[in-house]
Image (cartoon, rainbow, N blue to C red):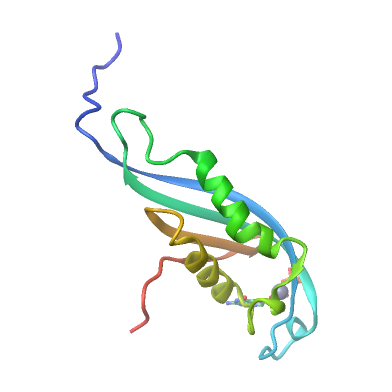
Length: 130
Ligand SMILES: Nc1nc2c(c(=O)[nH]1)N=C([C@H](O)[C@H](O)COP(=O)(O)OP(=O)(O)OP(=O)(O)O)CN2
Ligand SMILES: [Zn+2]
């Protein structure tokens, strides 16, 4: 027997959409090998949160999120040199830059998570320090 759910009693949910891009960078203020030009296969998660619309059953269309990230971010970074876009392209600074590019186009954007190497990621939520 199926459990009756009143979908008009809307709930919040969070969508996480995964992307990959390859890019080169160097860290101009780093005392170590990352000072030199090198590359990464970056793994990017974009999170959107909001109310589940009772009519569509969705917070947002996954396809719309994919299209916006492709247009606003991947088209700018994939197989590019990140130093042409950012003066100091650390994972932290790239994540913030991605968030700010997406925010005007993705209502409910709440988090950007960027893996630079397997096992090491930065999570950015637009919060101020201090
Ligand atoms: N907090 C941060 N730490 C580091 C960042 C960063 O953006 N934020 N970036 C780097 C470098 O970009 C570096 O390329 C990271 O790689 P590394 O630690 O050297 O790991 P690799 O897998 O590339 O190294 P191997 O030498 O192949 O093991 C460093 N830290
Ligand atoms: Zn690096």
